[in-house]
Length: 204
Image (cartoon, rainbow, N blue to C red; front, side, top):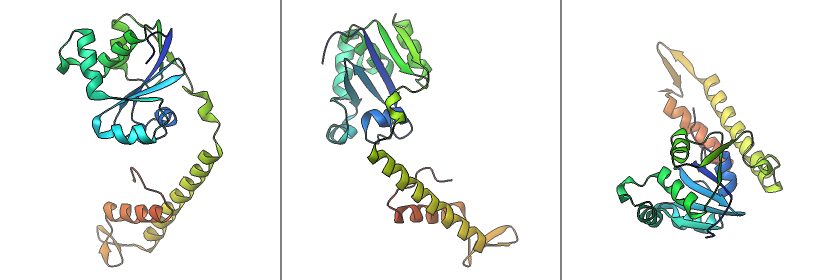
């Protein structure tokens, strides 16, 4: 890891919910994690649970183990290990890279923005696309979007077919002789998506 950089970029998000994080990592990580970009290299700090998969499958130049980095941060910042959270890790890396400015995306958590600001760093919020290149899709990304749209459409068609065939009986919606619950409808949608090679997420 290099020790000097005039500017670093920080992200703290789950790649499952952040397009910027997914673009940088290339893998799905369900929980928020710290990513650092410095001197044209990218780093991820992930827990032991995710370490092996992210190290093997991601696009990061270097994947760091959260538990080890927390210990180093506690020693460097001279604080208790229990007091080392994401904000303290960010300050630790800012010190390691001897930065003058930190760039963060518009959806960066305000609590960590404040932590960096209070530590004396100049923090700049990047408006618009954090990674402008993300706007232009590769052929593989375009194919994935097409596949995702096809799976989504299949799920919607399945739900529409069920609702058209269902009947209202009193206060119940009945389909094929059984009460049509939201859970049952969700299962039908998920199965339709799965048949198209996709996994549905956060369905209705």
